[in-house]
Image (cartoon, rainbow, N blue to C red):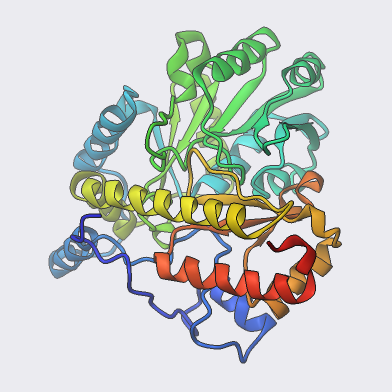
Length: 402
């Protein structure tokens, strides 16, 4: 692997307000300094040098007042989406938001009414549920089908039935899928689009992981499939997942349909969710214009790490699995054969193995018995985590160890 970038150094975030590190220390205040949490989806890696150096230079002359998007910012976003995804976007389609989750909340309020049904393919990223529940809408689950190889596919027969119910107005779609790591095939996307068009569903397509695609796979932006589909789709994008910039608070919501865009902007006004993030705009611009080689190298690291986990499970365990991912930097680990409750599995991981993953049950009831590991960390961190897992399982559940 090219050694231009430092993907080996860990920065200890104790006492710095890091959400996942604080969660770990809350559970175990005396945990050893070498334990790194692998839960929440931000990276345990240093940010691209091009972004750091660019922000330092910017701060030499910047005034951090109320700041909105500007021409070179729009150009960076438009060029990136075209270059990486063949997604041709016009400036007026772009609406900035503090984050994709806040944008989804605004979409739910803008495009549905209380008690309307909103379809989600489960298991899925847990803020999808909260955006529905907290706004007094109804969660309509379309559970995905899993084959014997732990490969998930959409239950299109059930989806079509749910979509045909006039009470269900919206689909919140995760592409690539978190936590399953699926990159949807073009024919799958076409089926989703055709069902939505046939039944007048609006689609929120959360594509925040779309830059994080493993070698030999290709992400297709849903709304690029047809003009008709682009008129009913809100595409959520951001540099924050790809470049580890969640703390700068910037995302780009692509809404071609003017009526839908106006409704979304009105809802943003109601919640006063305006983006004045001077550093966020600049960080996004630097990421898209200067840091592409860092991202390409990162993807090779993620692919290396996921194969390490996959091969480790195959070599050392029986009836536990870690299927390879196609996109994201999140791998879905199957521990169902341990037959532990949600709390028992969490306790085993935290207390016995000193592992801090994202708990599968938080992604929906069909996530019970699973754990989601964050692969965006130095390979040596992943290796140490796997060794701790094996030692703990060998002691408590020797029957699943080879």
